[in-house]
Length: 241
Image 1 (spheres, rainbow, N blue to C red):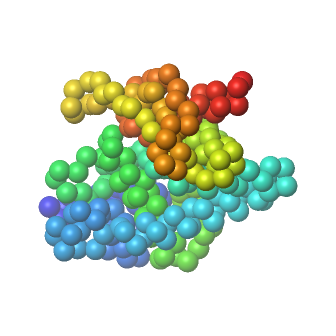
Image 2: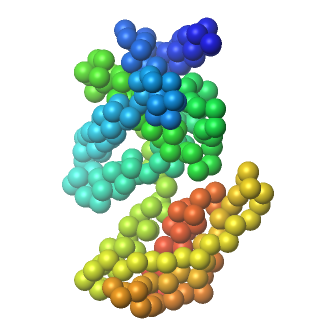
């Protein structure tokens, strides 16, 4: 058991080209809260929060250095939204770092599908751990951010921006936040379910129907992704385009 743990810790440090002075801190960053509570050991929860702030600071600083705050202020908002999107961070965690190979998790925890959040959390915690030990944002940038930053624009899930635009449009139109209600259809076996969102309705303050649409998404691994797929279509219909 300890040999496997030590091998994981050794391999991820080699992958990052960074050696932790405190390997217990690294293990903490890689340990899920479920396993931590089961075994009574430290887990990534606090480091994840720190890492979220560290990643935002570095990425937004990079955009500002590129002059993005002058060229397009919305870029900063979109960057923040992308960082807060678990799918984006999980994609980075897998594609550039293979983090799923190094995580210490409970037996019944799946790192794929709906548990994508774990990959995103560990990625944030790893950034938090490097910063906590080094107190050096440039080091986090060098070891983590620069590895994927050249691909950042293509990594961002643009559908989250459409959902944000739809919510902003509805709030401006109705002076409150209408609820968008979807129906869902599942396809595939239980261990590999895909979701289709369909027939969205926009509900008023008294749950009355303000708008309903005969729309249907493509199949996605999560209901949220299916909903986001329909956001630009709903917005287009609302605007009469």
